[in-house]
Length: 104
Image (cartoon, rainbow, N blue to C red; front, side, top):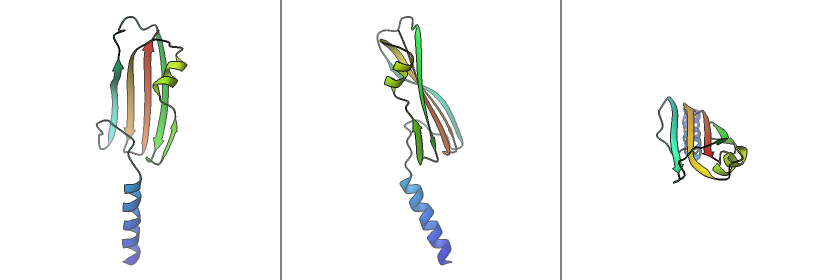
């Protein structure tokens, strides 16, 4: 009985310490969203597209750089028109995040 209680306490503390690095509406089983991040007054023809992505595993490990600046550099963009954000999360175990920058 004591081992069970200690195991339950350990899991509870582990869940409390593992933060959730998301700022979007989360589905309990599966989430796949495309969200706008920013738009400027330059909504003309976006001739270039740049992307940057990262992923998280168990909300404990996060790998990658999904910043707007990195996406801008990857697309050789000097003037940003608008930015979108793609999110895919499966049971909070695996999360994939991608920023897409449109501009010229």
